[in-house]
Length: 126
Image 1 (spheres, rainbow, N blue to C red):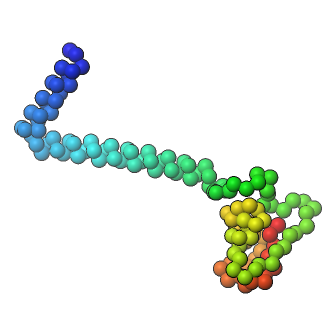
Image 2 (tube, rainbow, N blue to C red):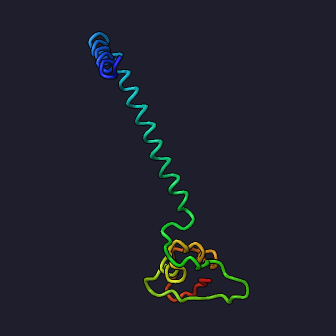
């Protein structure tokens, strides 16, 4: 049987089922459509999950690859004075090349409330 004849035969069967058993046909169609959507959305979720995991270490970091946020042995601590309107994010961008290193600055300093750091505060950056 040629592929065209096979397709016509199946199309006739589908039309006959739609006429004779419309409820079952519609339910079957809905089940197939929902299954397809579930599989497709799972694949999309998995794609973005894997992509997010691969960039989670330094998201958006495009600075110098030789920059290390950790103090090397024998290196003196480096400090900066926080200016008016400047945030820890800005300091991290200035010092490390990416604002995503601001938690490193938080670890180096023991701020009671990191959201309320006054301008003029001496902040350790390395």
